[in-house]
Length: 367
Image (tube, rainbow, N blue to C red):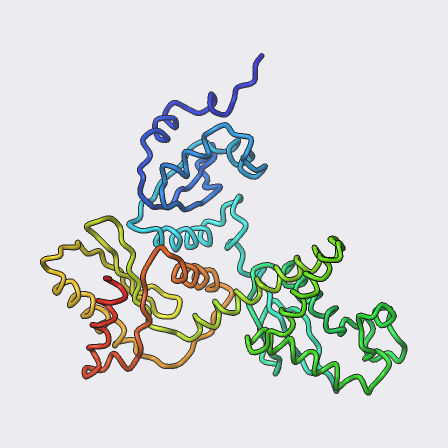
């Protein structure tokens, strides 16, 4: 008996739902035969995205093929903007924890880099939590594997990859040129701490020497046709760049900025979002009419004053593992071409400085 293709196996009701999909942004929830949500996704165009799952193609990954084999129905939640779809997807994945969504499902799997003082020298390790132990922490990072790869590459490059510290005899890595000798030579402690300080400065964004020299080593290895070594440096650099990006997200969000974001929905409408730190505190849709553009500016300005003035706070915040995904979505979207945004200075919220907000709305958000 001929085995049915996935397309043939789709129930008639589901075929009609696929055919009648809207082209708007939103979130889709894939369900199995028990009506259990097994996957949550988002799309700028639901029609194009969801329909792609129900097409026979060899380009589908094994994960998608397995997901397709278990899909019996799907549910849509429409949003006005792609930004709202991103944020809603994140929220639903955390709440539902679908079996086919690995990212954003388990905040406890996030990890921190910890620099800790031990006797005369500093040590570096990983931690799942932040303790009040006088250590210096970076993170949280969603992938422990990426963190380990980045740290290992930096340790080897800085020659601080000691596998047997303070034991009185040279370790194996010392003989391989990966350790400066802290394992047996007390005089190397100062040099070791200086190298570790370079890692701290790098993660804090104040020293790019490690990145520059690793990049040059990758280029040199490639020019010498040592492609295996070049690939190793490339993988290390990719992991390091991932850490840098996460630190930028955290630094930006913890500054607790006042952000006004506008996303154009169609030719005659836009949506305003007011964001404080990593929280969307206000959203409203406006119809665009050139004849009342002054009214539009005044409405937006009034909401900026109302919401940010009541939350006026110069202090920074701390991003936890439960909040890092929201923070990353906001940061990534602000740096995309999908929206326009402006950071509202606290000083602008004073009545005598309101012209600064007026100018930002006209020149940045509505231009």
